[in-house]
Image (tube, rainbow, N blue to C red; front, side):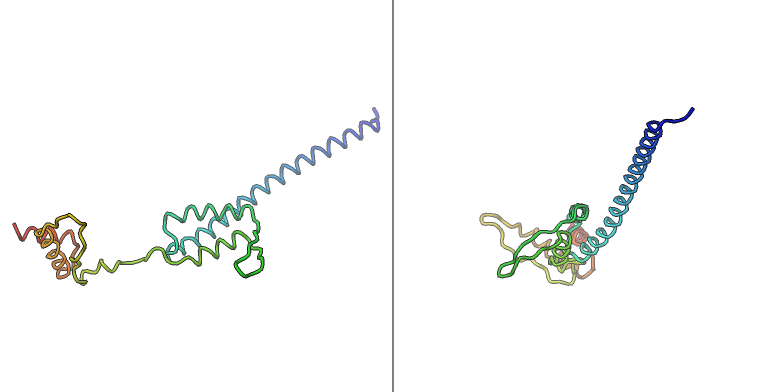
Length: 170
């Protein structure tokens, strides 16, 4: 049974549509895999950068997750914006590049390490301004001052020093 030209044309069209559908399916799968790989790479890169900024004290631990998600959103939809600083001409800047420069220029928000008042060798700080109308218990102030002195001498915590001073009184 011979095939007519219409049968041949219909078979070609069906095969073309099938091949095009398969091509589009594979392309969509590859696009999804590429987007996932890019997002994973960006997540690792941005996370390392933000952890460094946190270690430097420029970001707090609470700011890092939000900054990470914000940077990922900027990377997912790259765009530029235009602005002019006072006295300068307009500049076009990539949003992600601007944000990175911004967070890297932040001053230290958190001082990493021991605080100065954690040093048991420091002089006691018993001078303070009590609110007007309040009364300071002199016995408790005495315990506080002796506890500070005990903590310095024995290189211990304030709480342990208070307990030791209170036990000495008993």
